[in-house]
Length: 333
Image 1 (tube, helix red, strand yellow):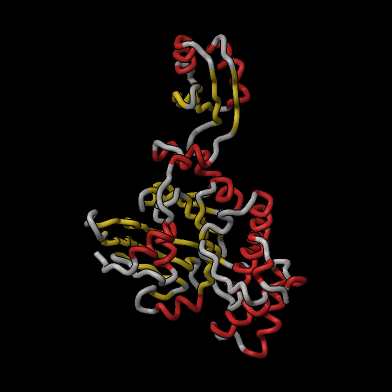
Image 2: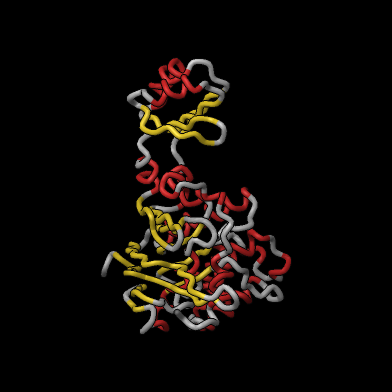
């Protein structure tokens, strides 16, 4: 059995724009991917970067404009029905029937996906227990909180024993405490069942906390792919921010041999420093009078900034799910 469960080569999706702004939008631009069996893999990037469109092609909701992809050994175009049997999907937009109970939602999904009748109740009970909803099994979903609904959607996506579970922005709109709970269920799912999990997110801390590997996506392309720790290490040091220093102090700090990079940002000077704790005293000495000093490890946000020249929080692009829903009725370019 191959260690690679998802393979994509040159995966591309174009949309034809209608109306006055005629032309073509390239939402995904030649992506190559190899996702290993049993890993948690993240597509990280701002809204509109192409993350959701990539997922939509991998789960056969959208046809690629170019390139190829295989999921569980099956081609997403020629064998779409086989791919769909191997994947579970939790998209951004809620899709539960809120007038049914939690149990009824899961049983309906199980029947649609061919879960054997003699196993349906046991599988439903197992999935409810996995996401800690056994006590609410027979309550209407309309009475559930946002976090409970998200957990139920994850359970539903697992009902038919998929090889791969796709989670599109799994904690979008949830409060921090509920997000932490959902993260815990995702970790437990991988640990207990060995399911391959592919998630999209624009939350840097989510990618860092959950993913074995992360692909940073920008304007439809993968600009970096590695383990979160390796991506952060690629910056070459910790981040030291100095505020209120003089131009002479800034020049002196830039000249220090252990300062790998210095950039004016957010009203201060942000340094990438090799072994910052040991060299901090020398930095402060060279800088002279300063108003503030902050030292912290590199974050994925810093990696994105280094690769793209902007913060992910500056991106206000349209949600990718809305984008492909709007354009999917148009002809392919």
